[in-house]
Length: 120
Image (cartoon, rainbow, N blue to C red; front, side):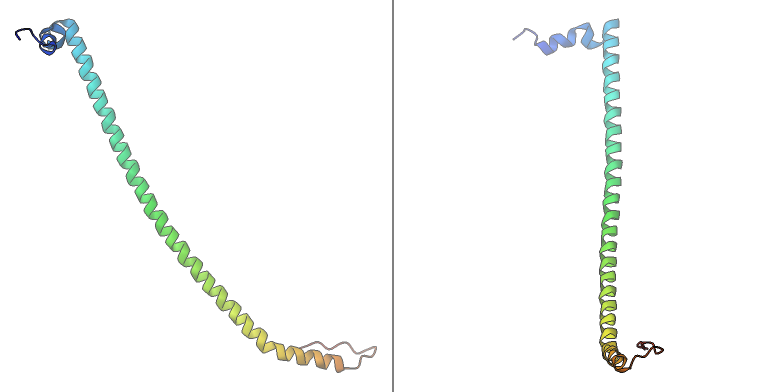
Protein backbone atom coordinates (compact mmCIF):
# COMPACT_ATOMS: atom_id res chain seq x y z
CA UNK A 1 0.00 0.00 0.00
CA UNK A 2 2.98 2.25 0.32
CA UNK A 3 3.79 1.94 -3.37
CA UNK A 4 2.76 4.99 -5.34
CA UNK A 5 -0.07 4.63 -7.84
CA UNK A 6 0.50 5.42 -11.46
CA UNK A 7 -1.27 8.75 -11.04
CA UNK A 8 0.97 9.78 -8.18
CA UNK A 9 4.04 8.66 -10.05
CA UNK A 10 2.98 10.66 -13.06
CA UNK A 11 2.41 13.76 -10.97
CA UNK A 12 5.96 13.53 -9.57
CA UNK A 13 7.61 13.40 -12.96
CA UNK A 14 9.01 16.67 -14.29
CA UNK A 15 6.88 16.54 -17.46
CA UNK A 16 3.61 16.36 -15.56
CA UNK A 17 4.51 18.96 -12.94
CA UNK A 18 5.84 21.36 -15.48
CA UNK A 19 9.42 21.25 -14.17
CA UNK A 20 12.06 21.42 -16.89
CA UNK A 21 12.02 22.94 -20.35
CA UNK A 22 10.38 19.93 -21.98
CA UNK A 23 7.59 19.93 -19.43
CA UNK A 24 6.93 23.63 -19.91
CA UNK A 25 6.74 23.36 -23.68
CA UNK A 26 4.49 20.30 -23.52
CA UNK A 27 2.22 22.01 -21.02
CA UNK A 28 2.15 25.18 -23.13
CA UNK A 29 1.35 23.19 -26.26
CA UNK A 30 -1.36 21.29 -24.39
CA UNK A 31 -2.94 24.48 -23.06
CA UNK A 32 -2.70 26.11 -26.51
CA UNK A 33 -4.53 23.12 -28.03
CA UNK A 34 -7.14 23.39 -25.29
CA UNK A 35 -7.61 27.11 -25.95
CA UNK A 36 -7.83 26.50 -29.70
CA UNK A 37 -10.35 23.72 -29.13
CA UNK A 38 -12.44 26.02 -26.94
CA UNK A 39 -12.30 28.78 -29.56
CA UNK A 40 -13.35 26.35 -32.29
CA UNK A 41 -16.19 25.00 -30.15
CA UNK A 42 -17.31 28.53 -29.35
CA UNK A 43 -17.22 29.51 -33.02
CA UNK A 44 -19.16 26.42 -34.05
CA UNK A 45 -21.76 27.06 -31.35
CA UNK A 46 -22.12 30.70 -32.44
CA UNK A 47 -22.35 29.83 -36.13
CA UNK A 48 -24.79 27.01 -35.45
CA UNK A 49 -26.90 29.33 -33.34
CA UNK A 50 -26.89 31.99 -36.07
CA UNK A 51 -27.71 29.42 -38.73
CA UNK A 52 -30.52 27.98 -36.62
CA UNK A 53 -31.96 31.44 -36.00
CA UNK A 54 -31.74 32.28 -39.70
CA UNK A 55 -33.40 29.00 -40.65
CA UNK A 56 -36.20 29.59 -38.16
CA UNK A 57 -36.75 33.07 -39.60
CA UNK A 58 -36.79 31.62 -43.10
CA UNK A 59 -39.29 28.94 -42.11
CA UNK A 60 -41.54 31.59 -40.55
CA UNK A 61 -41.33 33.76 -43.67
CA UNK A 62 -42.07 30.78 -45.94
CA UNK A 63 -45.09 29.84 -43.82
CA UNK A 64 -46.42 33.40 -44.12
CA UNK A 65 -45.82 33.30 -47.87
CA UNK A 66 -47.63 29.97 -48.10
CA UNK A 67 -50.66 31.38 -46.25
CA UNK A 68 -50.66 34.45 -48.50
CA UNK A 69 -50.52 32.33 -51.66
CA UNK A 70 -53.30 30.09 -50.36
CA UNK A 71 -55.57 33.06 -49.63
CA UNK A 72 -54.79 34.65 -53.02
CA UNK A 73 -55.52 31.36 -54.80
CA UNK A 74 -58.88 31.13 -53.03
CA UNK A 75 -59.67 34.77 -53.89
CA UNK A 76 -58.82 34.27 -57.58
CA UNK A 77 -60.90 31.08 -57.70
CA UNK A 78 -63.89 32.96 -56.21
CA UNK A 79 -63.48 35.71 -58.80
CA UNK A 80 -63.30 33.17 -61.63
CA UNK A 81 -66.49 31.46 -60.37
CA UNK A 82 -68.19 34.86 -60.19
CA UNK A 83 -67.12 35.76 -63.74
CA UNK A 84 -68.27 32.38 -65.07
CA UNK A 85 -71.63 32.83 -63.35
CA UNK A 86 -71.94 36.29 -64.93
CA UNK A 87 -71.11 34.89 -68.35
CA UNK A 88 -73.75 32.19 -67.84
CA UNK A 89 -76.36 34.82 -67.03
CA UNK A 90 -75.42 36.84 -70.12
CA UNK A 91 -75.62 33.74 -72.34
CA UNK A 92 -79.05 32.88 -70.94
CA UNK A 93 -80.25 36.45 -71.54
CA UNK A 94 -78.92 36.58 -75.11
CA UNK A 95 -80.01 33.09 -76.17
CA UNK A 96 -83.66 34.06 -76.99
CA UNK A 97 -82.51 37.11 -78.97
CA UNK A 98 -80.02 35.04 -80.88
CA UNK A 99 -82.65 32.44 -81.72
CA UNK A 100 -85.10 35.17 -82.83
CA UNK A 101 -82.40 36.86 -84.91
CA UNK A 102 -81.53 33.63 -86.74
CA UNK A 103 -85.20 32.99 -87.48
CA UNK A 104 -85.66 36.50 -88.95
CA UNK A 105 -82.53 36.15 -91.09
CA UNK A 106 -83.78 32.93 -92.60
CA UNK A 107 -87.12 34.57 -93.58
CA UNK A 108 -85.56 37.43 -95.54
CA UNK A 109 -85.67 36.63 -99.25
CA UNK A 110 -82.26 36.84 -100.79
CA UNK A 111 -81.83 38.64 -104.10
CA UNK A 112 -78.66 39.77 -105.78
CA UNK A 113 -78.41 43.09 -103.99
CA UNK A 114 -79.69 42.24 -100.58
CA UNK A 115 -77.15 41.09 -98.20
CA UNK A 116 -77.83 38.73 -95.39
CA UNK A 117 -78.94 40.72 -92.41
CA UNK A 118 -77.00 39.98 -89.36
CA UNK A 119 -78.15 39.98 -85.86
CA UNK A 120 -77.84 43.44 -84.33
